[in-house]
Image (cartoon, rainbow over all chains, first blue to last red; front, side, top):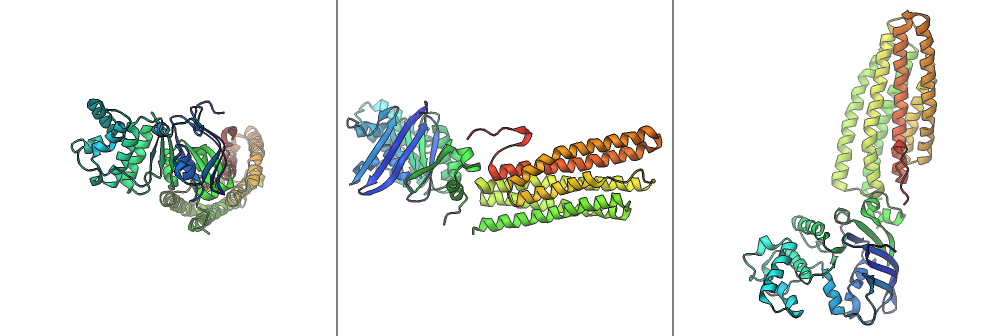
Length: 253
Length: 219
């Protein structure tokens, strides 16, 4: 087993009712690196990403087999507190989903839910999170304005700030830039580069160039199987598997 | 078939056309030497402008493909290899021009000795096969060509030693013998370029770097 693996997965299977959508996934995701999941629609990459903070628990009939650990701790062990797990493993979605509240409240809300009452402390964390999400400069003079008044790219960075506020170790990103224009996309990508010094990041993307640009390692999924997983540079220049080659060169119909 | 495959085919075709001109330049330079045909040598020198123009065209084409198609994996290796092969071909054509310049100089004096065509023909053959190997992405053929480079080196050395005896025999032979030594060296360099191209073909086909006796990492 990889010694610096933050997330370690062995023979992981996922079922929606009778249908098996992930088949025997084995993967070690290293700490403080960016790992990209790529693959055609329906290949299971998003399902797998969501398994990493048990987002699939609420889907009726969803069931897992195998082992998925973070820092050696089994995520699906019966005694795991899912709420505290999700605090450690933050998630950012394709469609930005800020609360219909002020910019400030979007971040403060989760902190209060977590029991923090100290106003000064909350102010501090709000500012720090917005800094880390590279949004502070753009919103510092209007923290009480509605989050919904922000641009799409800003809303997405606000969601990243919100995820960072509770101090996770792992950040899961499900196509975080697919609804954004190239400039906003670039800002998100720059942010990913910076965040990896402090966080382990897993990003699902349909944009192959984005995976090539931002990630250290890339995993290619197809039909619920992990086809190839290696350092991004090698995967995009000399993939070992024909299937990977065909996918990244656009040979699939 | 992807649109990109069409683009790749067009790129291949252009490279083939360029290498066709280069091969012709080599065979004409050999003929100009053998037949002491100055007019022929001059035509080869003139046709070099065509090769230069094709190099510029291919440069523009490969750059455009990278910018607009963002090739990956095998496609990326193909386009970047094409980009590196083009200047090798241009260099080979320049060497054919050098051969012709020496031929013209040699024709101004009586023949020293008939050209042993083996070295020249081998270089020509290696260039042709290198391009074939590239177009067919054939690492087996590429490796065969690479193996033959040692033989070319041997032939160059032999030809040099032979010319040395002419120089020792009669100092009036020296200028012609030196020019013929240069000619030998030019063909040897063509074979070197063919070898370079073949090393790129192995990378293209297998993703393995073999130049500079590099041992590929375990994957």
